[in-house]
Image (tube, rainbow, N blue to C red; front, side):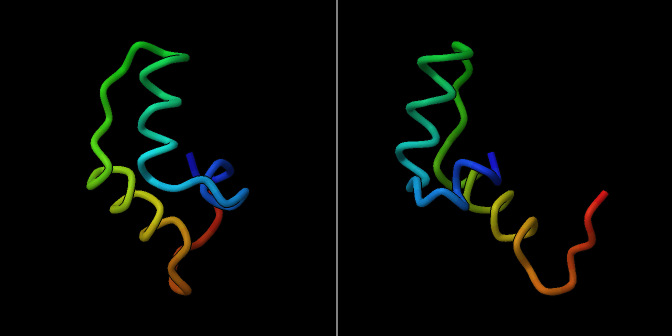
Length: 46
């Protein structure tokens, strides 16, 4: 998800991608929360 966001995809595009590829429904709000946490200056790679 973070890689899609870093490539410039919007939260809506990522949501549609997950639905199309994985059949999973992920809201734009959920994607936004994940990408915000994953790209914050205090986040550390795992």
